[in-house]
Image 1 (cartoon, rainbow, N blue to C red):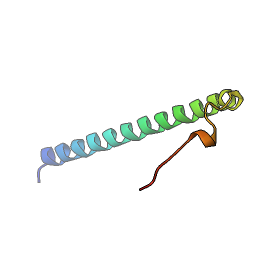
Image 2: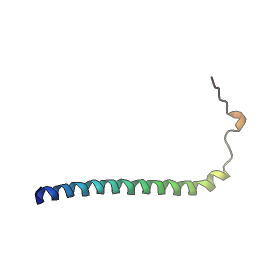
Image 3: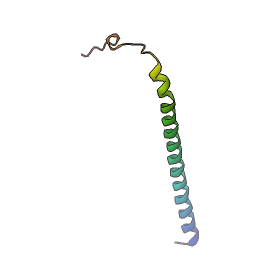
Image 4: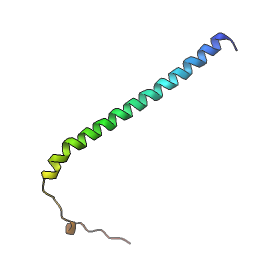
Length: 62
């Protein structure tokens, strides 16, 4: 192998790693936003009355 081929392979590997790191960061940011939303809405939703009671829900199994 020549130095040019080695450099090209290293660049491809680094590019692949950068894409994977970007995906991980994006997933962590999404998870963080979901957790913040759940925490901020929890108090609001706990104070709201239930729209349906358990007896209102009917499920048929066959």
